[in-house]
Image (cartoon, rainbow, N blue to C red; front, side, top):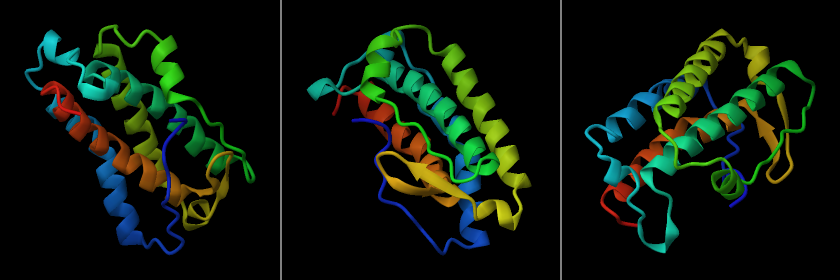
Length: 168
């Protein structure tokens, strides 16, 4: 799968919806850390059927995805109608040595989420109206960004829990 699967554009997101998603986004790192509580090295590397990712690979993917999201958000805010860059998640997982220790990737996930959440809190109503284009998904607003990345860590928490049990 190349990049994140979308299907989200919400043209009428209101302030309350945004704030709920910002809070979900803000707590994504804690949810991931909680899902890893007490995990053993064997569980980190338990491969579910159908070659699904291990918990270790998911953590590294989250850090890589988050660094891409960091750039995307800033481009949406600072550039006029930017074209966002897609990336091949499976290729990154294959090439970027996802068998390494997860500590630094968890730190990246936390730092990037904290910085982006702080930025989201500072956005003006005019900032929220900015948008760009994603090469695979078309129009891509800051609201779309928020919907995708607020759910991303939570979705992977469920995948980590299944991976720990060796279930696809």
